[in-house]
View (tube, rainbow, N blue to C red):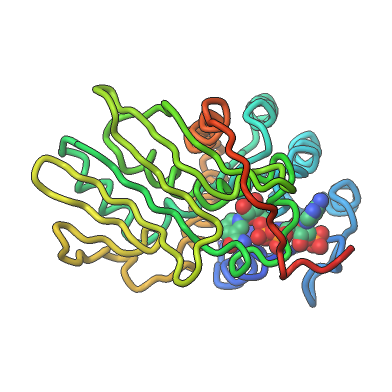
Length: 320
Ligand code: NAP
């Protein structure tokens, strides 16, 4: 197999923690270049801008974007316009209309656009989906709570419009929800807590209906101290499915289930899965852009009542 030359754009936390290790472990790719304002990663040629990369490296057909959502569109558009296939970190952009425009461009150019949802590649998500496929879902409770100071130290973009605040992690829950439920859901209400000095919410509740009425309650919190809580509990007629640790662990009626082939994988497995899927899409020259998780977030903003919350001072942020 010939490895596909791939460039990574934005060498921050997720690029270093997940993308670079996943690419190093894969035979399908060669990390051929980076685009980074801060220098990239040792041993890999770096460019200051996407445009400079595109001009200098026609030998790189695939570009993976790990930049914050607010700056994703311009780079991705330039890459597609230059005939390169594109993979996007979640959320795929700062606006639904922007991602739709990228999808149309990819289609017009006959290129692959892959809007990734890494949590869908967590070990127990396929088993949860399979188990629920013939069940009647009575209710879903989502608890998605983590300490932003631990998981996103110093990331100011999260608090700027388009950075999503608490929805940056909570959209992962919505990506699992829309993957495993056998019915469609739609947002009916939300309360969102905005710190007085932030443009995005720090906590909230979101409610969703299924086809026959109230179905989902999501409790989301970025100030949660202690172990992160990333859990969905699905009540069906008489039985309870619990998907815990961000989709890694599955219980039915309190009894742990085996996740099959993916059982021993940790979060690295999610990114192995994402890059394997990108390779499939490249092979078949198709795109995958499922915007349902982002639509739920956009609807929560549309329907959400704004609640003033105390100022948030990030002790991990360095002055600039
Ligand atoms: P991050 O640590 O802040 O890294 C983002 C990188 O993008 C920066 O280090 C910078 O890299 C580059 N960049 C370009 N323009 C920027 C700008 N205007 N402001 C800030 N950075 C800019 O963020 P991250 O945690 O890696 O998250 C990036 C994306 O991955 C987000 O969409 C996030 O939701 C997603 N994600 C994050 C995690 C996680 O656990 N952190 C998990 C899954 C997905 P250079 O210095 O190289 O230019």
